[in-house]
Length: 414
Image (tube, rainbow, N blue to C red):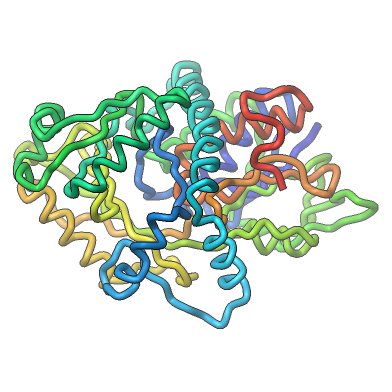
């Protein structure tokens, strides 16, 4: 079958890879000039397969009033006269229940562990270079109550197949000496040795090269898909800025853009952009930078080592539809870095970036069939796109082929 994949971010590129391996003829179309330069460009760089708890959680509700009152809080809300924002927000509030969050965590964990297996298979099979490292991940806690809650969650996730360790302050410092300057603030940590890190943009580019050379995948860059033409319960063409593209099947995998494309054909995936920010520091011989991926749980900031660079990411802006960098938010993120790693001794000013994460209210992506018999979707991964990309692509390929998958049939469907 000839399948047109709409979107060349990490979800679209891994989807194209999985489908090409299944023997399909694949064409990828994207409005950008190359693969991965949208939301995949400078994300948090952590492959956190075991840390997939949804944003919607009862604990978040308790923190919302304080967060919304602080200009540099981890989460900022800009209320708009936008029905899409209100539909999404109502769905988010409905998902902020303990039983719902626990069920979602268990479901996302299935997909996360499957994604880890497939990502490692990809790395071993293709030997792609994207600063991939299995460095583990350490969640660092500065609040005793939050740490105790995390240990309880660790016990729950252990019952689902996660291997994690609770560390005291001394063990955290032994694992990651770069934390020495904030030693007195640390009450403990949760360490998962099986987590990875990598450069998402580099992986997208490497996949583009490998697919074009080895699998004959065709790419149409600088080509924006404007709408899908339908006839008799199926898609007959994708109308693009460069004319119509026809295929036997179509996959919507273009992140935030999936919402408008789906709505044009009467499907509402409830995808809304959540803006996030990152900094990328070039390190020097004098840099006291972490080797292990870190999460500053208190401030909701993550740190990932990429060779001689350090990626720092965090913050959520709800209601911001532009990818422009907000200088005040970036300044706040720089302050967090300076307080956390005062001896970073970087080579110069960091690269600043902002991107729109395609989020659904309950944090669960949509993977699989739509009401149209030759149209599938793989979108809505929020901040977990890189983490869940390989597993989501595998599930998509399984569902298109009508074969059993490692993820239960009922999960992540429209």
